Image (spheres, rainbow, N blue to C red):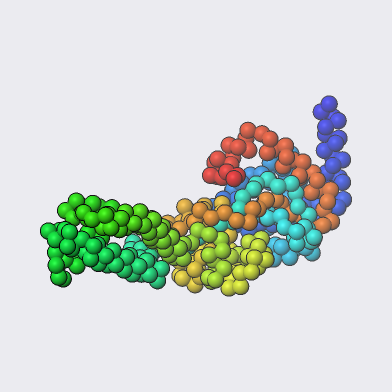
Length: 356
């Protein structure tokens, strides 16, 4: 049995090597923590661990080659390298130009914004009240209180002079009664006695319930819209803003396809987060696990806030040139085997990763 298994491994390796012009595979990477983490001379991370397991099982000789992201993609297209172990998102455009292994991790993109100070949050809160819709509602409220107060005074001033006095003081009595009745406070210090006065009071009470409910909803809506405008949680809130992402990434393609026009690109997520910190952009959009890891590990980025926003579902895989189909099939099979083990779950937890 062992001899047969060894023979299969040798045969498979021979087929794979026949498609590769080098005896030693050139395996490219660019730092993308927590998938690929540079710790001095050491290289670790989920993808590094996974690749080492695959290479050991398939007895593949390889050399790790650091490259920047754009050059790595170009080398995959031209065959300058044999494999990229970066967490590359599988997209239709990339699939036309390179081979992808089976996906080993699923995630999504998200957004990071600069955290708003407490003072600015308080100012935004106040602005939520003093908007046009709120002022209109307030004007209508005052108008209703005055009209019903005047009506109540006219109906009650003769039959109920103790409560609704004559002259300007009586008008004030009517306005006070109208305001107390409309807001359902009901002090009981003033009440109508005539039939028409009681009917007007009923109209005011029931109408007041509806109006106050609508005004409360309007205020809540204004505060919510204002909060979203200044600390957005909706994907479309960013379309009119200057946003950043990593150049040649799946997120850049996604943003372009969804009509984002003001996009600034960076060579890496680290550069993008620093650009956000310097206020070069209003938000940085990229892969959620990478952004979350970098913000947690870099104390200089504690002024940035990761939003609970999910868009652009992504499936990560290793990529190879189009000429390496046999090698891709071997690696894909090993990825499936490894993902079914308990060890895979342990490694995911070790790097603080979990699929949605």
